[in-house]
Length: 387
Image (cartoon, rainbow, N blue to C red):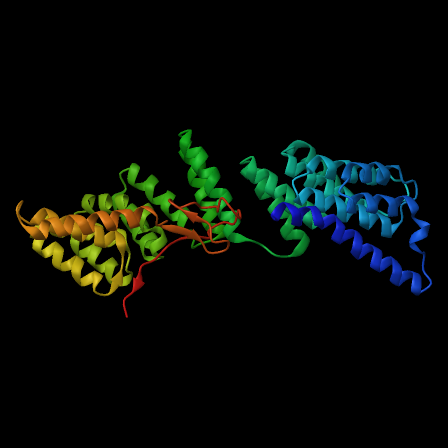
């Protein structure tokens, strides 16, 4: 059914064009008979013979604004259907027409660049978008496409350069994205043990976005590795209090920094739990309570939490503790194990993160959504309160 709909797209485009031509004819404009080859080409599209249609289109010698728009629409349709080679052929031949206005030439060049992107020919697409910037045609869209290419190639320095150009062009800055680019550069520098460059990039990230959680996390990890436990603890607490999304990323280092600074881990975790209902905080605190106060105290703590929040991860922990606490011949142990199996099965199908923009579900935190490519939109899926 979906394939049939795709096949009907060119027919819909042709019908729309034909109705428009009839309306123009009634108003005394050029009739459809002035474009016999174009009409034949549209008939081929209606007959599901796209290659014959393209052969006719590329042989047309007269191309005005109206026929150029047909070229652009059909090329875009082919690209959306995944027929990138046909889209490239249409847009390439359109660009060769000498009578195109600069505006239409810019549109055709941009569409051809999108075709190359769709085909994975990033170098050709990059060259076309740079050409558009030099010609001052479709400049904003070309710069956005260049940024997309450089993100794919992980060329973060060029991402920064293009973002600066966009900011100068449209007067809108994106501090969160700029901060993430600097964080990417900081992580690369850290991997090659260039700590001075890593710190400099973190400073630039925080200058762009003072609340950049990723920069705070990186700075804290570097401080902890350097033995600066108090500074690391301060930074990790800032990260943890900014939201439940970042607790999984910071929790192991946070506990390590607490222990290095001689803090009461249970009291500090309880303080954080009081600010936000996060499953990982609850699980970490329950483990500490179990080791210091015993299994019954941990069960009471988990049960109190579950009375207020519907949380499968915490339920799994409670059932595991209950099964372990019961005697080997206790029927309650069997019941707890059965319920534990159900909870684990349900938990396997639950993604802990999702993208606020496109809904993409993820098993781990991504700073950039793998689906819609937005920065900082992946957040934790929070437990629902029990009313």
